[in-house]
Structure formats: C-alpha cells, structure tokens
Image (tube, rainbow, N blue to C red):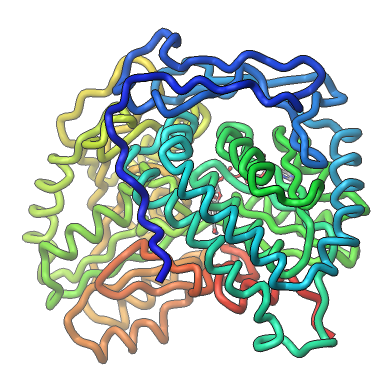
Length: 511
Ligand code: NAD
C-alpha cells in the first residue's frame, strides 16, 4: 500500500534559498522571503515557503505575463497583508491557453495509459514531497487551520492523483475498448474553500482519461494552483497538458464560453452554476456541476452522545463551515435535545479560534471580507426572525476576517438560516419526534449534497440512507472522503460525480 501520510511540520527556522524560475515572464522576479512580511504569527511554519512577488499565467508549460497586463493582489485573510500579485487573464490569454491545450491533446490523448499513469504518480509523489510548503500556503492564502491543510487537504489531494494514476492504464476494465474516448480540452473552475483539493478532484480524472486542461482557481486562493503548476513542470508533464489561468468571474465566464472547450467542470455556488447551465444550453458541451448544500445532520436518541457531539462539531466547524457538504442543519430528536445541546455548547466553548498557522487552532479566518459580510447578514436575519443565538465568549483578533462559532436554537424551517447556505461557522438547530419527521425535515431543502445520521441501530441507518435525498449519507461519522467513492449532488446541488469510476465516466465520450 502506498503511504500517503505527510511528514509533520517541524519548527525549522532557516529560510530556503531558491532561484526564481527562469521561465517566469520576461523579467524573472526575486523570490520573497515571508520572514520579511510585517506580521509575526507562528512564523516558523512559513520558513518552508518561498512565494514570488508576482505570478504569471501557466500556459504551455511556462509562467508567462498576461496579455491583459493586469494583476490582482491575493491577501492573507487572517492579517489582511498581501501575499503576492497574481495575473488576471483576459480573453487573449484564455484563447492562448485553450489553443495550447488543444495542441497538447493530440499527443496526450494518444499516449498509452501506462505512460499517463507515470506522470500522475510523479505528481502525487511531488505533492507529498512538497506537502509542508503546500499546507502552509493553503493556510496563508485561505485562512484555514494548518492542522486541516496538513492532515486533510494536502494528503487527500495526493491520494486523488495516486488513485487516478491507478486507473489510467485500466480504463478497459470499466469502459469498453474502442467505444470510449477522451473529450478534448476541459475547462475547470474551482472555488476557494479547498483550493488544492478541488484542483486534484478535477485535474486527476481529466488527465487519467486523456484530456487536457485549462483550470481557473478562485480569485481569493490562487496560490496552491500556481505551486501545482510548478509541480507539473517538476514532473515533466508535457507542455500544455495542464494550464492554469488566474482571474475572477469574468475570466471564468470567458473560459466557459470558449468554443475550443469540450467540457466544463464547475464547482462553486448554485447561482453561478445555474448561470453556466444557461450559457451552455444548446452548445453541445459536456457539463458537470458541484454546487451548494444545506445538509441535515440527524441525531437520534440512541446515538452515543459524546461521539455525536464530536461529529456535529466536525460537521459544521471544520474549515470554518466553508464546506459544501457541511452538516449545516442539525436535527436532534426531541427526547435528548436538552442534554445534547448542553454538551454541544460546552464543546463549542472549548474550540480555539485564532492564528491559522498555530497547530492548536480549531477555527481559522473567514476567507474574505465579502464572505464575512454574507455570514454576518444571514446571522442578523436569524436574530431578526426570532431564533435564539448562542456564541461562546471568544476573542476575535483585531485584524483579519473572523466569525465566532455560533449556534441557533428556536429555529423554524422557514427561517433564512434554515434554508440558505451560510458557508460559515453557524449551526441552526431544530428538533424532531419520529424518523419519518426527520426525513421530511431533512429533505425540506432545494439542495441535496449530503446528510448525516447518528444512531446505533443498523436498520435505521439503512432506512434513513434510502430516504435522504442527497448524494452522500454519512452514518456515525461526518466529512469522510475517499477518492474511490463518487461525490456529487442531487437537485440544486448539481449533477455529475467526482471520484470513483463514475467520476471517470464524466470525462469520457462513451459510444
Ligand atoms: P462562486 O460560484 O462565487 O465561485 C466559484 C468559481 O467560479 C470561482 O473560481 C469564480 O471566480 C468562478 N466564477 C464566478 N462567476 C463565474 C461565472 N459567471 N462564470 C464562470 N466562472 C465564474 O463560489 P465560491 O463562493 O467561490 O464557492 C463557494 C460555493 O462553492 C458554495 O456554494 C459551495 O457550496 C460550493 N462548493 C461546492 C462543492 C461541491 O463539491 N458541491 C465543493 C466546494 C464548494
């Protein structure tokens, strides 16, 4: 078995000296030492990191200046300090990226699967080798606790490449030879909550099946995608097979509409997903959408309470609640509501909010000012609509974007906090009496991405799993992922699957 566990981050103080890559634009830019930045949180962790002051677009195997000549700053949401400037791709840049990917497709798609597998294995190993650097940059750019980047995001990203490397030369066993083919150039657009992980969910199956890629990371978290571009170079992936264009919604919109693109794989909000669906209607392009969620997390009266409390805390406070499948509606059986809520409040009161680079931190920074405003507005609506708010005493740092862990009781299904995706550390709680009522309440949503059930009765788990209308139902656990298990939504949570053999099918033309 391949060991995918990352080495632990040790407090090393010397700064790694490294040449600036010669291929970056026409003027190589000096690497920046993070030690010089005017902030001092758990800095030893950043000693593994070298960021450039400016990043170009990764097109055709090299970092190049954007034709638009425009850049935007990406900041550390825990301090609001700038980390680097990142190119903003315009339509000429997207044209070039798609053209280069189309040209690379003619050779990449004809490579024997075993050869493609070698590149994927190399990438997986390089992600492991550079895991400290990737984890620190993911935390700096996104605000998530380093413990999560280190133990979840980065190892799971490597696992996705290992898993799909295994498939590249075995596609015949799942899809008839001669009756399947890759699609061509795939446009992939990802959100900011799990940047490198979402990238790996998209790029690994696309490459394993013989497609080439133009990927656009989210505008607030582009840095690990740019480090990944460097990993592609290190792995000697043929030029043009993976291209990374950075930019905001406009760049995404240009990419989606580009006539050279054969498939769009989008992960993000339901609103943007619907817009892309409208834009692509009648275009003949393949489309998969991984969108928002509002999962019911159901706790029955026979559940082991302490374990269920841990599961519920993990379900909503993991990654500050910036999780599409977060257990963001707690349904507790009425008979245990009082003792359960007492334990839950006590546990939430012990969560540590603060410096994301501190390995003891449970709740890091909110990813952006805009997201903080969205969370605050929804929480205000909960109070205005009559729900009862609980927030443990909690010191919020003066700079950066922070939100205290929040629990709402006295919630009605009609409240906005019970219906809308908050995407923050906020848990609305409702009760139920019977299993049938739990199912009815749980399914009372326009989403259908995930659900969770806590009970000791095996028969009840199966009964619930059959009835909950969502792509994933976790039982007596939450937020567990495996590259072999297909992930995706029902209804307004999207369509298509990522992971498993079903995820590969979405990147193939089946005859
Ligand atoms: P978003 O929809 O605002 O942005 C997602 C990406 O789309 C970004 O890269 C953005 O630049 C780009 N984009 C924005 N407008 C576009 C347009 N008109 N055309 C093309 N691209 C466009 O979402 P977000 O705020 O970055 O992410 C949070 C959302 O993502 C939440 O709703 C969350 O539930 C969802 N999400 C879903 C999954 C899943 O697997 N189902 C996983 C992670 C996040």
